[in-house]
Image 1: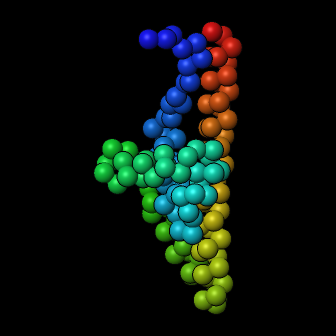
Image 2: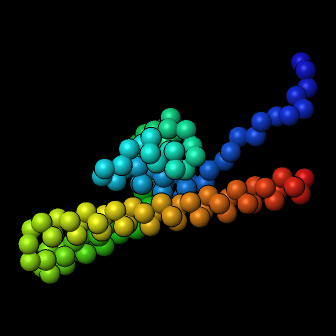
Length: 122
């Protein structure tokens, strides 16, 4: 067999990165294709992670889901019109999604920097 000199390295993603990507893709009004494009991963990979998540192989994060619900209930009390309330809920969901996306991008940048550093050390 021939010896390969330039072996392609497979990227290893952390469990936390996978969970965050899946949770981001499970948000309302978000498509798998969009999330995969933003994270620079193949959509099939994200779909596979979603399947693993549903099957319990990627355990959900321990963040309490009632935090968002509590904020929404407070918004209902303060909003005077139903349109304002629904708009506020929509904006809060989008804000949470963007925060998660930003955190994930920051983690991805750190991961790439570590990979680049380890490649140059070798």
